Length: 232
Image (tube, rainbow, N blue to C red; front, side, top):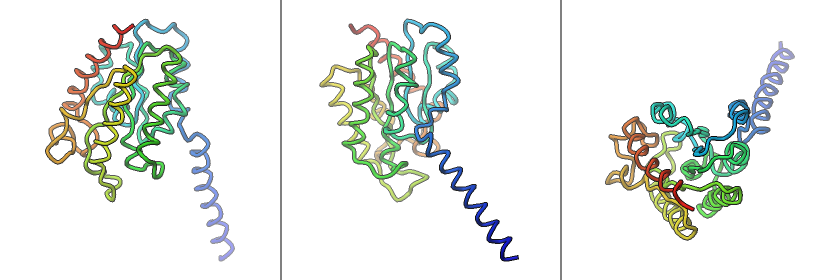
């Protein structure tokens, strides 16, 4: 009986380790869009292709606000839920550069503040965002940098108070964009409440937008895309 229990324990440990090891082998989740990218690459890139790079806020955009992407078939969503900027940087070539867009919209940083992949400084986060922007520039892809949406708590990590870090990171992103003549989209101001959080009329969990929230973002990013495409 004891022998059976030991064997069962070993099998459980092996299964758990195997699952963790499998995830670790594709830490940036390159497989998420591999098939979609392959299909997309079978046809020439449209003149005004735009790739949206981000985390769950970007991934859910095409789900909760599907009509926005339906009327803009040249808009390609490449958000992955839970991702931090180092993960996005690792998949940036596959999910952005190789797709040959005219513009990339980068919305990133909130999961770094949430420490989803461990503690990380704001300077490192900003460095990762800058690296993505600079990689895009080398490949003649125009860049739109987005302000991180307001948040004053994380449902999945209640021990962290993010509000002031969000404000600080947004200042860094805006200063970087201004210095390098990149388009900056301020999602923060029109969506924040008096407590430095995401206004309740735009969210159910304090982090992810509802359709009403995404519609605010639609108008702002669409204006930014038109402006950026006109740039020399």
